[in-house]
Amino acid sequence: MLADSFGRRIDYLRLSVTDRCDLRCAYCMPPEYKNYDDPEHWLTIEELARVAGLFVELGVHRVRLTGGEPLVRARIDNLAYLLGRIQGLEDLSLSTNGTRLAQWAPALKSAGVKRLNVSLDTLSSERFAQITHRDVLHDVLCGLDAAQAEGFDLVKINMVWLPEINGDELDAMIDYCRGNGFVLRLIENMPMGDAARSLGSSSLQSVIADLRIRHGLVDRVITGGGPARYLASADGRFSIGFITPISQHFCESCNRVRVSVTGTLHLCLGQEDRLELLPMLRQGASDSEIGNAIKLALMQKPWKHEFQELPQKIVRIMASTGG
Ligand code: SAM
Image (cartoon, rainbow, N blue to C red; front, side):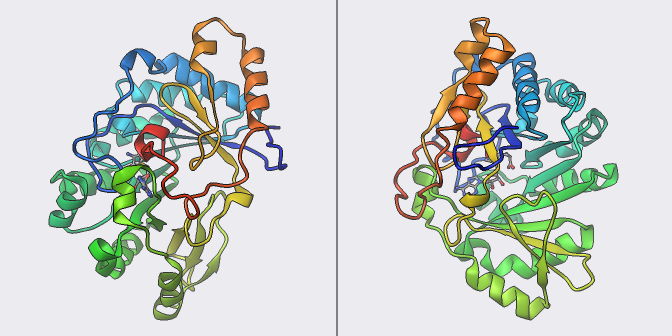
């Protein structure tokens, strides 16, 4: 069992397969962004699979593929296939912006991906282009149709809460998700990089209170729901989650670590503590040597992020960490 020095069990890995993305979301990667990782330092598909396997041996049983945009990585279907065959990995999921999902959904499903998180901040083409700097809302909606047709266990829609831009679309998003059987999740903007910081972060607490009353929603516990707190309709057919790192952090129940595409093990999304796995992977370290290094590094996992207290602290963007 993998645990940190506070006794928190770590059973969830977010594995980034690229720091590149085909969108330029205002809260993540600014249009002029150039700080990309050198492809020579990217973990190969086989190295990514080895890292995932090592974590599963150590006690992780859920892995999420992420990025950047994971569906721009060549051979993503091969990687999903390799991970789908790791004994002991109970849950393989993927986060995507959905632009290429129509093309990839069948291959991902047959490789063993069970659940998808799809980013969608607006249902308006104009606003989509304003937020992401790309006019491809139609592609994302087609991707979501394809995901639904494939019958993934669960599709969650991630909507970053930017009240001045998408605040008036909450009811429309609820209708869209309810109609399609998707779980909606609202996320407070985290101060990662200057672009995100410049947008500020609005608390979701009053939104939660308002939705309870207007939509008659009640508390709901979702297994594997991670840091989100959930409300659901009385008939249980619609759920909405709230990820509130700023207004109500959930670090005490943190169960995850992240590995970037360059093999950096990030022990906390909002701190700098890390372990570089690439040198060990490329210099012939054995599985048990790497496993021991990971276990030791876990002892340095910080108690909490400081997005609220020190919003200037994290210069790296979400896409380079693996969101
Ligand atoms: N491209 C994939 C996607 O869109 O899901 C995976 C990577 S993306 C960085 C993962 C998630 O992080 C997305 O839902 C995105 O909206 C979210 N995200 C990025 N920057 C954020 C920020 N500053 N605050 C909150 N969420 C952020």
